[in-house]
Length: 417
Ligand SMILES: [Fe+2]
Image (cartoon, rainbow, N blue to C red; front, top):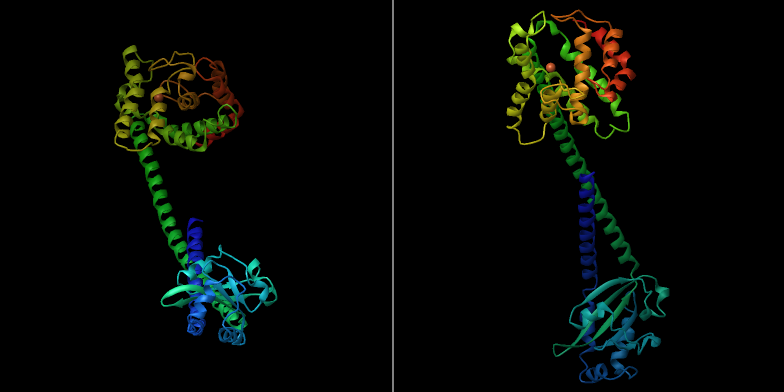
């Protein structure tokens, strides 16, 4: 769109400039002989100087008047006006124009400064009273010089149909050429842009896929210890996504859970237990209940995991999903009633991503077989989660779970360890 606007603006500017230049050139070469004809009338000095300096209505020297009247039979000339330096029309072959004054006429002003001016006029101005019947005309302003001084201006009107046709034809040619060149330029630039955009999109897609694979590799590193967790990462990520999408439908969470935020959470979810990389196999695979000391070691996985990612995030110069991953890792064992760990945060003090992760994680732990327990049926998991509504879990997240429990069942049946 920007390329189109720029090419269009450049083409229009170029079209106007070239067509004006071509028209000027055509007119200049057309009017070449008129200044020489005007020189003829200023030969008759000093009578002609007296005429220029006298008020309107005084007769022109007869020889000059004859010459100017003859000029109106020259080619397509139909009107001749003689202007005094103060912009009064001293003489015209249309007597009703004599005596009028038009000091605001820009072409006259330029001509009295010594410039030959030629413009195409529509003859609608007040000063062209009586000339409307001629339609469009070329008006040529020529300074009248005596001893190198401009004493007035002679204006000649020409109604040259061939000239106007030539001007229109040239303009049409210029515009067609410019627009054609503009279209070629636009298509070329658009092609280059599209190609670059496709390459860039492919590169960033590859980068995202590499990032996803790296995250999973990192997450599985921690999971290798814990041989019983199987598809735990895949399932918990899907549970979290189901809950986040369900919550995003409500007006309360619509803004907070934009598609971009959900995307960050989904990326972060597999990393929730990455801190377990520092917990010994003996604790992770212990079939019975953990001692207080062992439980304290296990609890450290939240802060250890967050610390790993904080070190990585410090090396980045932009906001990444790692901030979301850090909050999710650090707080996914907090409870709505403040009885969780590591900080005992409660209710809305716990980031939303962690409140959602908590339910996804516990549902999967209940539903799966572990060293220390059998797998529970969905109904049993559902009963426990409902019991913990407002205790362990955010009530809104439990409600989202109830709304989508069939999707939970589907995921648990699809990814069996
Ligand atoms: Fe955990």
